[in-house]
Image (cartoon, rainbow, N blue to C red; front, side):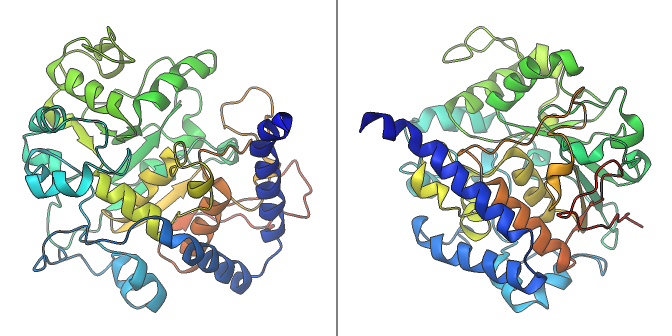
Length: 386
């Protein structure tokens, strides 16, 4: 009996893999309907609540080019997207009512097992108004175009570097290697998104591939994903430019990651309300019930959804597509490595979401066929952003 217990996670992943292969052959109507059915059947796990806490809040005015106009014209999308949910947390979002809402919810959806003083002291360090937003528009009618760059092997040989650099802002995540891959992934980095765990794991896992430090481009902004206590502790140490005083990362010097004397304006942190909202509305996988202690949307998914809730036009590069099997796991892999699915993220569901939003013209997903592979599973198309 005991041996079966250890096999269950593996069996679950096998079932998910078979499911994913089946949706590759679905029509647009089929996979769109399937995604909505999966999402609605699992919604009950997270409690529905008012994330805004403000009945009179109004959405910001956006230019005519914004995909928000497309969303408002689509009945199903309009029900899922809520642009009043706070994307970032900072000093002014930490209030007693917020504490009451979040202190019983586990990370990354709240502050369970953390004290009022610990959270308050960390967020008090995010005192600058720029900590509350990703960017400011130069004019009210400025069309802000964002590229979110994942690390998928589909980018190897893609020649998308110039297109990526042409965006106003570029988001990168985890092992964001650009040196030696400039033609395919570009050189520009505006935002680097991570959890403390993914940051340190990426440096350890991809060092030999060239990821020797996180991006440190002039003006770069670091987006912390609060997956646990260590993210709040690391953020506080980074802002104060001091060694991490306690916990799992005790003794770490944040300067080795973010450079010497970083400015407070360089740091952002996603709001637990936002992570809970996007999980419930878009990526409420059955894995959340099976593995509640480890499942959450992937780093790339959270950055892409962040961009979709702040930018006017969003392009996604290096994310999972139908024919992911034709490409290596990462664009910087020296030898082809297959993409492996784990229970902490539902990559299949994320892929369905990107495909759905691409088809509804909410975002643009880079897709192409590997010229070195003849795959029946391929879309057979290579699209480029104009």
